Image 1: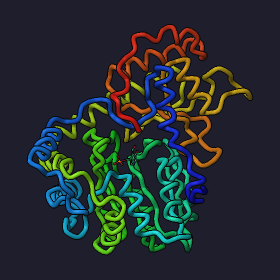
Image 2 (image 1 turned 120 degrees about the vertical axis):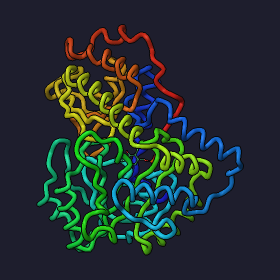
Image 3 (image 1 turned 180 degrees about the horizontal axis):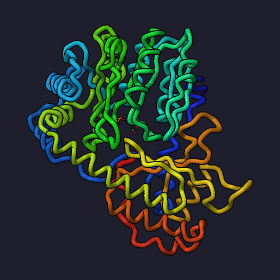
Length: 411
Ligand SMILES: Cc1ncc(COP(=O)(O)O)c(C=O)c1O
């Protein structure tokens, strides 16, 4: 039997493949972006209560009323952004479903969608599933956005731009000036902004500015976020979309046919968290991730990787040039280096090329720091063996004790 052509260019998620490799080599899995520590009790208790209270049937397809109202209060409180929970908010199965439902609802076959590179690995396939064409614009860690290149990417077929800030994998937080420049181009070319703000509360530098709050953008922005990262519940699959009523109307239809709705009792848990967790929770979240970022960054830096401290999200994109089994013309590519690091050092990253078009990102690997301090310290200890001679000889012997790395969650 033949399979649909639209799937033929898709690669299996490299991140899942790396996790298998980590298990095989008993390596610390710094490939997958999920926390290995507990979610707040408040959420878990509220969700458990909802199950016991028999909130176990389909929620309203576009989201339980209580959660949509809590989301509206959140946007008003944090960003002064008013959204009507009846007509402008949709609860989805994660930001992942939010993005594909949005593109399927709003982008026509043959349209172009601007995507910053390096990119979160779903955006290319999402665009292709919508029969549209991704157009890439570079946005590297530590580099300002090249506004001329961005302006050149806007063309007659451009329908949307995907804006991910804070960004996975670059760690960039777009500045107000950069967001204003993107907004100006969107207004000028009548283009939609589809934002992925899933890391809005994991940010170390700058403010989080939803592009929807900039002049002329409210009516042309689809704001996507969710509970996965802020509340450490990636397995719950609760995300949401805030968009003008006409766009929401189309998005809700696609969402209904794709998934019917997000898990009802878990929506109750997230509503409780949004309403009841106060500033102390968010400050503690940032402080916790800042500590983890600094720990991993200094481990990578002293092991000889070249990397910047990310401004937000929980990833470090690191240049490994000069490290590994061979340097010069025989140097390994990013996949070979990631495999070697897993096997010889016992730490598994993701090859950088997963975040670039064909041929890009070959000198990078990406590490996550959403892990307990114990795991990160053990990773740092293993990475120190690289500093000694650049080839990690003896690291394998130094690999005990084995920390509990995988919490059983798989992606
Ligand atoms: C940029 C970005 N968007 C979306 C997601 C997935 O979010 P969700 O769990 O809400 O589907 C991730 C997860 O790694 C991500 O890094």
